[in-house]
Amino acid sequence: DWENDGNVVKLVLNSKDYTNFQEESDALFAAARKMKRGSAVVEELLAKTLEGEEALNDAQMDLQSMESSVLDEGTMILIQERLERTAKKTGWKPPKIEQFEEQSKPRRNTTKMSQGNKARKPNPRELTSPSGHKVLVGRNRRDNEAICFALSKPTDIWMHARGCPGAHVLLCSRRGSPKVTDDDLQFAADLAAFYSDARTERRAEITTAEPKHITKPRGAPPGAVTLRQEGKTLLGKPDDVAEELKEARELSGANWSELGYRKGGKRANNKKKTAAVEKETAKKRREEARENNKRRKRKEESDWF
Image (cartoon, rainbow, N blue to C red; front, side, top):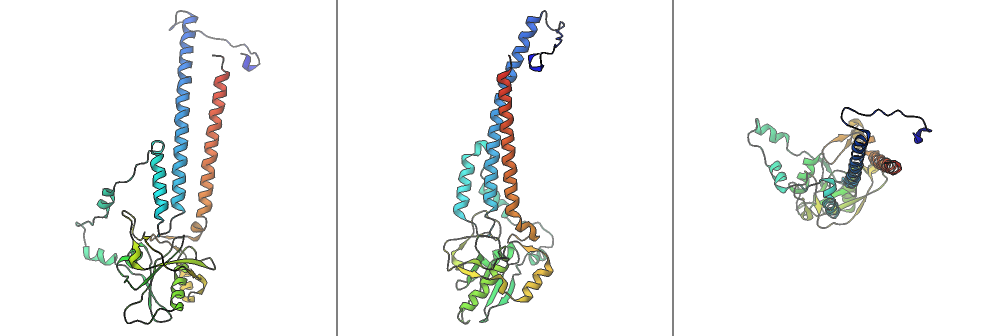
């Protein structure tokens, strides 16, 4: 065996299945060629699988970076088109609208219907602006949904922290109420920044809109909306909210999510870091697979058969 320093190797022939050594060697060569062809097919399938995994990971990271309840419709369309182009590699199939409609239908055969409806009734925070206007702040996704489509009036002003998850805020300006002042707008903008993932920043951009420009994409979860037209952009200052709100948040010991979940602060702060680590791990895994393929190719090319 010249690959092992010329060591002598004893070959035992299979006299039971073959009549002579030539017949056995031909059978072994045929099996080796078959395995070589199979390894090429497996290598191609593995490469396609890695490409599909990379496409799905990229789409997941794009969606995670857009977790604000104000969805970017243009980005969603780009992600969908990219998934459709790579569908053969990823196996992705677009969801059917009928599935969302079926899931959204209310169930009639439920016990204690009245108690269930009462439990699902929205209950946003109610605060008062410097001029006496009511300000509603969503506690969860049901509150956000209600603020946008059930509790708002055409004259109200809707607000949300730009580019990050947070509560929907509604500055109510009703008939007969005082004129909305800059102090009222700043008060609501500070609340929108405070009840969002931007609350640790000194300032945060706040998107405003008229309720008539708020729309809900078909099949989107409760509280997720898009804007046909944005209003004036404000700068919210989370640290300027009332001290009792800060104390209440400290006592709760959790961060609020616009999807209606409560989560620890470290999870929110480390979200980008975790996504970067996952991407780097996937990249290393793909590189290792490619190196293994190259080594296998070199070994096959060096084989004497």
